[in-house]
Length: 299
Image (cartoon, rainbow, N blue to C red; front, top):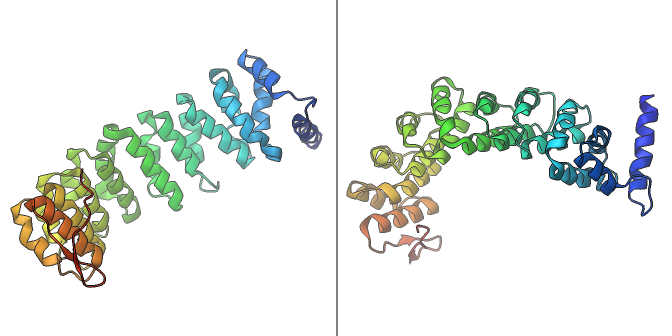
């Protein structure tokens, strides 16, 4: 019976692309928009079909219809068809369906599933802080793309995510901590300053210096000056970059020292930050050995 059903559905789908085919998506959408449950279910079923990009067309229809589709999207969220499941999750996220948080969270945490980053994205779109604990778990996911999207989703929560991130950071493993630091930096809440300063000597010091720069808090100046002597050139670059907006005359000698750094971008950012702090043009030695002025990135 199941084979017969999908066979018939495929025939309908293929026919939908013909001018006089038996499936009229416009008519089907009209019925679904009016609350016809059978039409809504059929649209959700069609999200499983890739032929002739029907699933893409139907997805746009589903999102446009909105509320009448929610019940039927929720019913299909556990579909074994990956494409259908992804379209369903994306639609629920776009429609900001709060009742979808729990089932979408289950998808995100099921490491046997692929492309789970879509679930992290959807939780960020829904925007309910109830999803924050699940996204915190996503920061330590073994899949990099899932970690990236979990971080971006937490950033969308802005200040609501700060306290949970700060509570997570002290006991987090290095991978999870890196995502938490990135999120705190992009959120830019000054409540994060002490926690980020506590990370400048650890394995995630590169991320910590970058985040401190984004906070633009003068309390980070001493740590940033120290970062200019770090063995990692990216740490030195991040520290030099951050000192421009927040540095005082105390940072000048250290930045003058890194004007002779072995790494080009460190020299460039040192000159740029010195120019901002002193208010005068400062040149650096480029890759050809010529003394040039860095272009301004500050506005």
